[in-house]
Length: 95
Image (cartoon, rainbow, N blue to C red):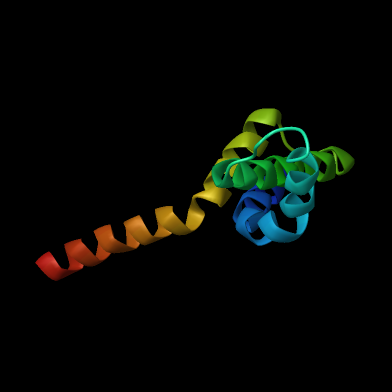
């Protein structure tokens, strides 16, 4: 469970680490090939997921499946929350 929570936090923090962490990696890679904006976000996600996997392994917590699901839910967490909020508000208005 701890691995899931660590990965969820890593997924959630992906946009925040895009500039300071993925930026230098992209600059290095651009010397060899073109990197698109979407790939920059993907690189940030991969770095966050790698960090979550290392921390989860250090705590000997979580399965690979739990870490992947946690990272995906963390990455899309705010969007999922907003959709659920709209659904709940829509039902509330109908009552």
